[in-house]
Length: 186
Image 1 (cartoon, rainbow, N blue to C red):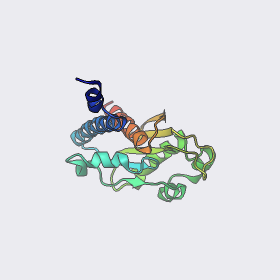
Image 2 (cartoon, one colour):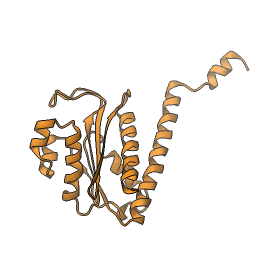
Image 3 (spheres, helix red, strand yellow):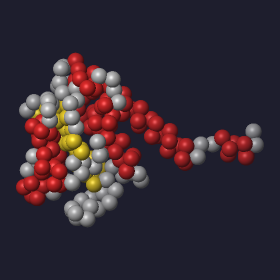
Image 4 (tube, rainbow, N blue to C red):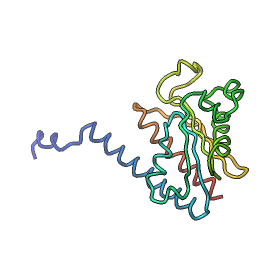
Protein backbone atom coordinates (compact mmCIF):
# COMPACT_ATOMS: atom_id res chain seq x y z
CA UNK A 1 0.00 0.00 0.00
CA UNK A 2 1.37 3.38 -0.94
CA UNK A 3 1.61 6.30 1.46
CA UNK A 4 -1.20 8.10 -0.45
CA UNK A 5 -3.46 5.03 -0.24
CA UNK A 6 -2.78 4.85 3.49
CA UNK A 7 -3.71 8.54 3.90
CA UNK A 8 -6.90 7.97 1.90
CA UNK A 9 -8.19 5.34 4.33
CA UNK A 10 -7.06 7.03 7.54
CA UNK A 11 -10.05 8.48 9.40
CA UNK A 12 -10.38 12.24 9.30
CA UNK A 13 -10.99 14.43 12.33
CA UNK A 14 -14.67 14.69 11.35
CA UNK A 15 -14.95 10.90 11.00
CA UNK A 16 -13.36 10.39 14.41
CA UNK A 17 -15.75 12.93 15.92
CA UNK A 18 -18.73 11.19 14.29
CA UNK A 19 -17.56 7.85 15.68
CA UNK A 20 -17.21 9.36 19.17
CA UNK A 21 -20.71 10.88 18.96
CA UNK A 22 -22.08 7.53 17.85
CA UNK A 23 -20.45 5.76 20.79
CA UNK A 24 -21.71 8.32 23.31
CA UNK A 25 -25.19 8.19 21.81
CA UNK A 26 -25.24 4.41 22.03
CA UNK A 27 -23.96 4.50 25.62
CA UNK A 28 -26.72 6.95 26.58
CA UNK A 29 -29.38 4.86 24.86
CA UNK A 30 -28.20 1.76 26.76
CA UNK A 31 -28.32 3.71 30.03
CA UNK A 32 -31.78 5.06 29.15
CA UNK A 33 -32.99 1.50 28.48
CA UNK A 34 -31.76 0.49 31.93
CA UNK A 35 -33.44 3.50 33.54
CA UNK A 36 -36.78 2.82 31.86
CA UNK A 37 -36.55 -0.88 32.71
CA UNK A 38 -35.74 -0.18 36.39
CA UNK A 39 -38.50 2.43 36.69
CA UNK A 40 -41.03 0.07 35.06
CA UNK A 41 -40.07 -2.84 37.30
CA UNK A 42 -40.49 -0.66 40.39
CA UNK A 43 -43.64 1.02 39.02
CA UNK A 44 -42.03 4.45 39.37
CA UNK A 45 -42.46 7.64 37.34
CA UNK A 46 -39.82 10.23 36.53
CA UNK A 47 -39.95 13.88 35.53
CA UNK A 48 -37.18 16.28 34.59
CA UNK A 49 -36.58 20.01 34.82
CA UNK A 50 -33.75 20.77 32.44
CA UNK A 51 -32.13 24.06 31.61
CA UNK A 52 -28.78 23.86 29.80
CA UNK A 53 -29.47 20.38 28.38
CA UNK A 54 -32.62 21.66 26.68
CA UNK A 55 -34.60 18.47 27.24
CA UNK A 56 -31.86 16.08 26.13
CA UNK A 57 -32.40 13.77 29.11
CA UNK A 58 -36.13 13.50 28.38
CA UNK A 59 -35.24 12.96 24.71
CA UNK A 60 -33.16 9.89 25.54
CA UNK A 61 -35.78 8.47 27.90
CA UNK A 62 -38.56 8.91 25.34
CA UNK A 63 -36.53 7.05 22.71
CA UNK A 64 -37.05 3.86 24.70
CA UNK A 65 -40.17 1.71 24.14
CA UNK A 66 -42.35 1.84 27.24
CA UNK A 67 -41.23 5.35 28.21
CA UNK A 68 -44.86 6.46 28.50
CA UNK A 69 -45.19 4.02 31.39
CA UNK A 70 -42.59 5.95 33.40
CA UNK A 71 -42.73 9.54 32.15
CA UNK A 72 -45.83 11.76 32.06
CA UNK A 73 -44.09 15.10 31.51
CA UNK A 74 -40.78 16.93 31.42
CA UNK A 75 -39.92 20.62 31.52
CA UNK A 76 -37.33 22.75 29.75
CA UNK A 77 -36.83 25.90 31.83
CA UNK A 78 -34.14 27.87 30.05
CA UNK A 79 -35.04 31.19 31.67
CA UNK A 80 -34.91 31.89 35.40
CA UNK A 81 -38.50 33.15 35.18
CA UNK A 82 -39.64 29.77 33.87
CA UNK A 83 -38.00 27.99 36.79
CA UNK A 84 -39.68 30.35 39.25
CA UNK A 85 -43.05 30.07 37.49
CA UNK A 86 -42.94 26.29 37.98
CA UNK A 87 -42.09 26.72 41.65
CA UNK A 88 -38.32 26.99 42.08
CA UNK A 89 -37.94 29.54 44.89
CA UNK A 90 -36.65 32.83 43.50
CA UNK A 91 -34.70 33.44 46.70
CA UNK A 92 -32.69 30.23 46.08
CA UNK A 93 -31.68 31.52 42.64
CA UNK A 94 -30.95 34.97 44.04
CA UNK A 95 -28.91 33.71 47.01
CA UNK A 96 -26.94 30.91 45.35
CA UNK A 97 -27.24 31.77 41.61
CA UNK A 98 -29.12 29.84 39.00
CA UNK A 99 -25.92 27.87 38.40
CA UNK A 100 -25.62 26.13 41.75
CA UNK A 101 -26.10 22.88 43.61
CA UNK A 102 -28.95 24.47 45.56
CA UNK A 103 -30.82 25.47 42.41
CA UNK A 104 -30.41 22.00 40.87
CA UNK A 105 -31.80 20.43 44.04
CA UNK A 106 -34.68 22.93 44.11
CA UNK A 107 -35.43 22.05 40.47
CA UNK A 108 -35.51 18.30 41.28
CA UNK A 109 -37.79 18.92 44.27
CA UNK A 110 -40.04 21.32 42.33
CA UNK A 111 -40.52 18.98 39.39
CA UNK A 112 -41.89 16.34 41.78
CA UNK A 113 -44.61 18.82 42.78
CA UNK A 114 -45.24 20.26 39.30
CA UNK A 115 -45.42 16.95 37.44
CA UNK A 116 -48.65 15.13 36.71
CA UNK A 117 -47.01 12.12 38.34
CA UNK A 118 -43.42 11.60 39.42
CA UNK A 119 -41.55 9.64 42.05
CA UNK A 120 -38.11 10.63 40.78
CA UNK A 121 -37.25 14.25 40.03
CA UNK A 122 -34.22 15.47 38.09
CA UNK A 123 -32.88 19.03 37.96
CA UNK A 124 -30.09 20.13 35.60
CA UNK A 125 -28.66 23.65 35.38
CA UNK A 126 -25.36 25.13 34.28
CA UNK A 127 -23.47 27.14 31.75
CA UNK A 128 -22.24 25.14 28.81
CA UNK A 129 -20.06 27.25 26.56
CA UNK A 130 -19.97 30.90 27.58
CA UNK A 131 -20.47 33.29 30.44
CA UNK A 132 -24.17 34.06 30.66
CA UNK A 133 -24.68 37.85 30.40
CA UNK A 134 -27.78 37.55 32.63
CA UNK A 135 -25.85 35.55 35.25
CA UNK A 136 -22.29 36.93 35.21
CA UNK A 137 -20.99 34.52 37.89
CA UNK A 138 -21.50 31.59 35.50
CA UNK A 139 -18.52 29.43 34.60
CA UNK A 140 -18.55 27.80 31.17
CA UNK A 141 -18.52 24.01 31.43
CA UNK A 142 -19.83 23.95 35.00
CA UNK A 143 -23.05 21.93 35.30
CA UNK A 144 -25.08 21.03 38.39
CA UNK A 145 -27.23 17.90 38.45
CA UNK A 146 -29.58 16.69 41.18
CA UNK A 147 -31.82 13.62 41.42
CA UNK A 148 -34.41 13.29 44.19
CA UNK A 149 -36.13 10.03 45.09
CA UNK A 150 -38.05 9.51 48.32
CA UNK A 151 -36.11 11.39 51.00
CA UNK A 152 -32.75 11.08 49.23
CA UNK A 153 -30.98 13.50 46.93
CA UNK A 154 -27.88 12.74 44.88
CA UNK A 155 -26.24 15.79 43.38
CA UNK A 156 -23.13 16.33 41.32
CA UNK A 157 -21.08 19.24 40.11
CA UNK A 158 -19.72 18.45 36.67
CA UNK A 159 -16.91 20.29 34.95
CA UNK A 160 -16.87 19.44 31.28
CA UNK A 161 -14.46 20.86 28.73
CA UNK A 162 -15.67 20.19 25.21
CA UNK A 163 -15.68 22.20 22.02
CA UNK A 164 -19.31 21.68 21.11
CA UNK A 165 -22.44 22.19 23.20
CA UNK A 166 -23.76 18.88 21.86
CA UNK A 167 -20.79 17.01 23.34
CA UNK A 168 -21.31 18.61 26.76
CA UNK A 169 -24.99 17.69 26.72
CA UNK A 170 -24.15 14.09 25.82
CA UNK A 171 -21.83 13.82 28.82
CA UNK A 172 -24.32 15.46 31.18
CA UNK A 173 -27.09 13.11 30.03
CA UNK A 174 -24.83 10.10 30.65
CA UNK A 175 -24.08 11.33 34.18
CA UNK A 176 -27.77 12.03 34.83
CA UNK A 177 -28.84 8.56 33.67
CA UNK A 178 -26.13 6.93 35.81
CA UNK A 179 -27.19 8.99 38.82
CA UNK A 180 -30.84 8.01 38.34
CA UNK A 181 -29.84 4.35 38.28
CA UNK A 182 -27.72 4.83 41.38
CA UNK A 183 -30.48 6.43 43.46
CA UNK A 184 -33.32 4.10 42.47
CA UNK A 185 -31.19 0.98 42.95
CA UNK A 186 -30.44 1.67 46.64
